[in-house]
Image (cartoon, rainbow, N blue to C red; front, top):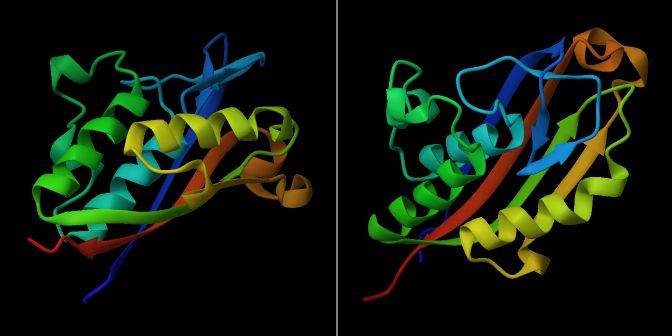
Length: 161
């Protein structure tokens, strides 16, 4: 059996007056992502990781910014759709490991809902999905609260037919 891994990363600037959505959860905050979709960096990193695992482009290839269907889209729906794409390509998703980096806004109260949302989107048991949060100890754009980033790693395996 040939396992494959994929790694994804995304970062977006945070601006006042926009929603902050991570892993499909709207986090109460005074700033969020001013992006084409809802800007959910965790979901975007997951799609990139899944695409990388099956060597099939990246988020921008499958969901280009100039696509009117992606305007104001819920990024967790991209994860659901791309999970199906991975399965149709002949792979099973084994597990997901991820983390979100954001300084001044505490994410711990929302981690379990993010895990649950990702598990549901990918049709995985909750035990196979990890979401963690880091503050960056006030360092860099994420630590200062000017941006939020996410990293994701996935493991897939070919499906035996």
